[in-house]
Amino acid sequence: MPVSPEQLMEELRTLCRGRGVQTPGIDLHVGPALRQVCGIVETDGAEAVRTKLQGWVSNAVRGFPAEVRNAVLAPLGLHEDAQFRFLNERIEWLAKQQDRGARTVRRRMDAGLQRLVEVALQPAGSATHAMPSELWHVKEFDALLKLDGPTPACTERRTVVADTDGVTEIAWSITIPAPTPDGAPGDLDVEVLHGVELIGHERPSPRRFLMRLRLPRPLNAGQTHQFALEVRVPRGQSMRPTYVFWPERMCESFRLRVRFDRDDLPEAVWRVEEALARDTDDLTPWPKALPVDEIGEIDVSFPHPRQGRGYGVQWTPRG
Image (cartoon, rainbow, N blue to C red; front, side, top):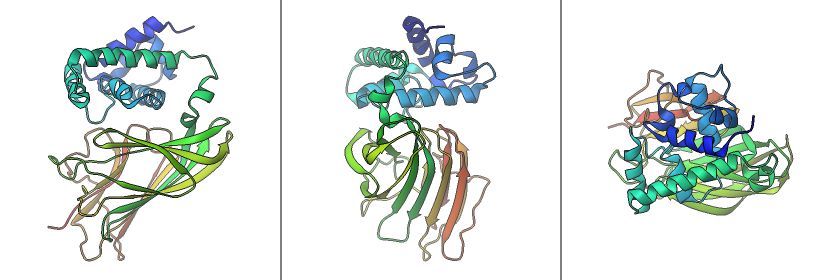
């Protein structure tokens, strides 16, 4: 049955109320139009519904301008910096971020939701040409975090798989936590090591970095390509003791190795798995403690990490 744009718009507005997509029992609050466009079936439980909603919205807004994208993500409860209980609180947060009044932000929210509806209802096949960077997934993500040098540095290698013909770009993003609970987010130095060309970047929020990466040649469905980036914390800038990966699209496997300074090993290291938003904020040790080996490293793997959940490690620095 065709989805009515008016019905889909009304369901999105309704979903913004309360905690948005984070509402407990979300499967009882999603209407038939959203179910159809997100591929939600009757047997999906609340968490499956939440994951499908988050994946659909995140992919749909990837090509939006930053202020429009945030005007969709924050009201729906999908912006990690705006996890407030009520819609009014998320609107107030967005108003401060954009230096606009609440009424203006609400108009932007409606305009953003309208664009979301347009994406959902565009003719079949048109997205292939409009948003090629959304039509791929991650086969392997391998990260090496080095803490034994002059400044923290992480080598991130990804193998991506095209899910359709003609994929020419990859969108890469990273969100950094503040060095301390009350501290301001810092900066990052990012260097392409191989496999892609950096053709665009933006910082839609103080903590979030987005980059557009061009592939050396178009990928057709089923073809793979590997690229690597080096991400460094600028010298003199502290790093919060955490590395957590939050998949925004399907990822088949994630492996993380951390190399600590052998002269300054942490007091405790623990594995983070299936974390929800804010679960990792207070740096409270999780039950799954990790031993540091004789050369000062830990090595963890996560097969099939789920979209919208957090995976990685945290640690307590000595002293």
